[in-house]
Length: 294
Image (cartoon, rainbow, N blue to C red; front, side, top):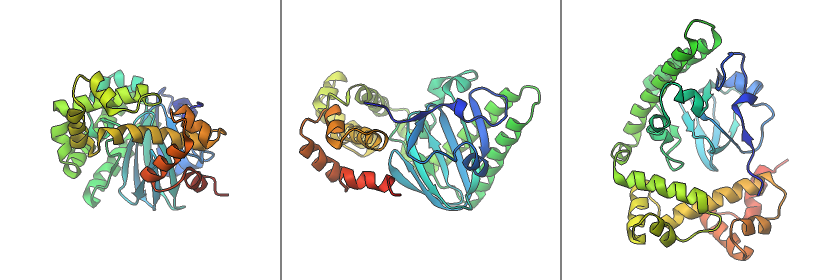
């Protein structure tokens, strides 16, 4: 299968002179770097954005989130996103590669921030007015530093970015209190291992029992873990990953629905179509029609 369009950070240069880092206002980003991107796509970098004015819908892995003043979003590398925004949209955006972050910290540290834990972590926060003002000032500081050429520029940017992540983590824990206990218990680490295994095998293996065997536990215990961490059964976690890939394929390549289903391990397209509609509430044709209007 052809993979979903993956945008590289080198496609988003903004005159900062830094490799592996980008910052801009939302207006500037939409008018320059993002003006010709219309379909859902994914990136190979970590991304943070704060909307300060305007409205819209932001889809992340085909889940819709409201955009309004104060909306704060985070994306992991590989997540698919797409938006429909009002003409008066304002805000700030920055993103960086894993390598940029690893110069100062390490991968385990960035993955410890709750919005970057997992593909099942909520990617959206809605701070109150006071919190939004603080975050706005922090994003502005990142942008200002990115535009100058002072000594130790990269060091300062990374410190400012880290402060955004720290402040956002405090807000995230307030809005998702269960996350603080999940982050350090064995259930969460085992759930992340399940995600990794599903990512490797979802096109050929759909059985929760098989994944439980890989993790040296019973299927019943695996379900207990997925329910505690994601509020889903193990079967739902696997199926969600399959259907996410199906949606990406439907949008980005010319193969028929049946060919996509077959590549994902379903020889019986009628069964796959029923599964898709049961889980998403729409047929593959209905889904694709929402992105191909006009």
